[in-house]
Image (cartoon, rainbow, N blue to C red; front, side):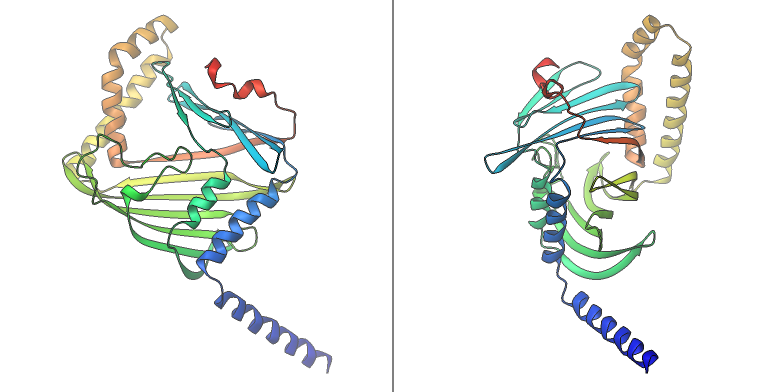
Amino acid sequence: MKKLLTYTLTITLLVFSEVSWAQMTAGKVTKKVREAYKEQIKGIDDLTKRTNRGITFQKWIRGSGETIHKFRKEEDINGKTQITVYDGTYYRTKNPYTNEVTKKEIEGNPEVFYKYLESFDFEYAGRDKVNGIDCHVLIVESVPLSEIKDPTTGDSMIPPDAEGMQDATVDAKLFIDSRRWVMVKSVFDAQGLQMQGRRRGARTVIVNKDFRNIEGLVIAYHTRMNMTIDMTEEEKQKMKEARQSMRQMKERMKNMSPAKRKMLEKYMKPEMQKAQSMMMNGGMSKEIKVQNVKINQGISDDLFDGSSL
């Protein structure tokens, strides 16, 4: 009798679970993601995250019914440090090569990203597993690239001087953790990109893993991004040569004095940019590994003063 009751209860729970999943919608998923973020940051005033590529500082200031978010990011870009600061109103970036500082007024609260996510007409495509994590899958197809904005700055993903990109479109597929409501994987397929004199397709895949709960905040300790672009065989060979050229230049510069290295950077910068461009046209990969995270350390507001860049 006990076994029969257990069996009946199990079947009932499974049926109920299937009905619940069947009633899930894309709108419910994106809303859950935003609500989960708001819940996670409730007790967090500041965060310091160090990775293999640099360090990020974040601060949340609460009052008068609103939350002001500030951040500072110092990232290694080919041996130089690029600094980005958001003081709650202005977003500033310092170019590591020219020391030029650009300034733009934006709404930089991370919640804006989640609201932006809800603005797309996603379809709910069921469930799937990514690295053993049960995920809700959302898809959207043929979104004009001209309608996609950078969720941080609000800038169009199409550069102002770009030509022949107005017809480019993007398909997106998102995998969201069904338990913790965080992004596990995202796949973006772009069509009709105008590059190097012809139309191309490109795929970008971002995978987050090694999720850890740090004082209530769920953080991916390992993120990998891969981007591939359609290429001819001749272009693939040129890309291979460009990578070899870049490696040789970096090896030569290692043993130079700072003064000589600075001089070489000045004269070789066009060649390095050409090699980097060739590598970008074939694709790129980026890996971020979190080394440590510190919560509520009392970060000084001075860190977010972009006027001092």
